[in-house]
Image (cartoon, rainbow, N blue to C red; front, top):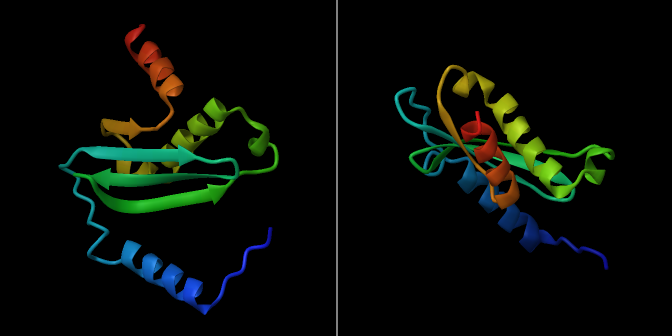
Amino acid sequence: MHWHCDNHHDQAFNTIKSLLSSKKCLAYFDVKKQITIQTDASSFGIGATLLQDGNPIAYASRSMTSAQKNYAVIEKELLAVLFGCERFHHYIYGNKITVMSDHKPLENIMKECYYGY
């Protein structure tokens, strides 16, 4: 199956891209507010969003290497968490943060690590 992208698709993509990076969507970082990093992984890439009060401050994503594509799902999800923390290091250093992931087994493992000691 081939993907066909015409002028209509390009226009829709550019509209979404401009809305996601506009002042209406992105907020300014406030050092006094709670920080949340929301992460996700797919078969081919990882992404993270820095949030405060539910509003995005910054986005980050990248493709996985060929070796990383062979990781188990839980490893990909943890890689996304690590990527988000590294990418937004200058925002989160020295602060307590909340990390959100949609991978429940990883969430349970992290709770055990945190509360187990």
